Length: 70
Length: 401
Image (tube, rainbow over all chains, first blue to last red; front, side, top):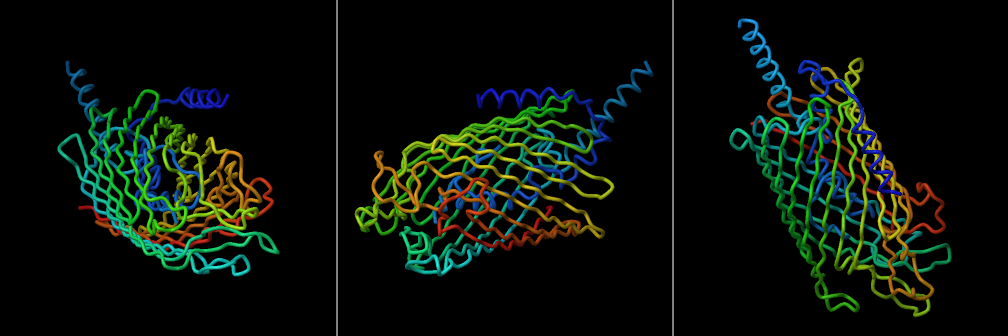
């Protein structure tokens, strides 16, 4: 059931019909603050803290290593 | 003939413009797959992490002062030939303080026994990656990392790939990672403490990013993580009332996690700012499920300043073998009183100020995080007394070489 939900959500997302943008229309998307992670050092430091203090972790990356057990 | 030439010229101009747009930092990581770093970049960040003292009304014994961590990070990114780039991340942390040990029943609810404030540790981590861009649509990246602490070593490898379908404004990404970890706890002579153990984890994910308009892009992803080996915490114990004593923290040797992610980036030209909205659903076979929402607003200000307030909400359910303490042993032998496996919610507020000086930029960021049972989505009967509160102050510098 869960897998079905996931596949459906992805199918809906990929089925969005979008007109291709021209190069000159990409100015806003190209701005640094529109990146998934504008500051990669902050993202890795923060992810490690949350990984050490919460039961959940993970996302769209393969992650790193280390314990941070305390 | 001349018409064809004009068309070809227009087409090559368009390609050049597209390539220029792709080469801008930001669009590379969020929207498109395939453009190597255009220039070398060096970034440094120093962070001070400070946990608040544990409330003395919740403290049975040990130090009230908790953990402090100072972190230094360095990142170097550089083009490597015409179609590749390389990135190296170094991290050095020093940690000191006390951490929760076990929980006892008290007259007004569970009370925490802390370790002595004698923990002194350091952690070094290096992550390196090389990305190759096969075309303007496809890229692949190989990652290798090594992390070491006084009592812990981890080696991780990874492979990520990305492919863009321009006519649909769609970018597909996938990754596979493996980490091999080894733990050798300090003070192995302590009762119930292991000498050494190993664990490993395997991660696989797929993601789809879709440009919805000239101002909006979204991403959905699924990630599966399989952990195997020693997954208990050798430094934590569990109070058994029937024994009037503690036993070792004991968790299953396998854990399968599923993570669903959704992210949105939306630019508002009238306000000259960008909205970030992230949601993550986490579920595992220890019965833990969680919801995480991140909301941030990147406000561009005059004279190249940028102010970013953000809010993070987190709520998790408990592991099936968790209890603040136990009146008797479980049939399966598992037991943990770790606050990280308890039911709670957490709220975090962040404020970031950044200034672009041209060749380099600087940023200052503060975060305040508080976890409490009352912040959980579900009702919680007994709050774990070890739940954490912390502040992080960071200073960052980014230099374009």
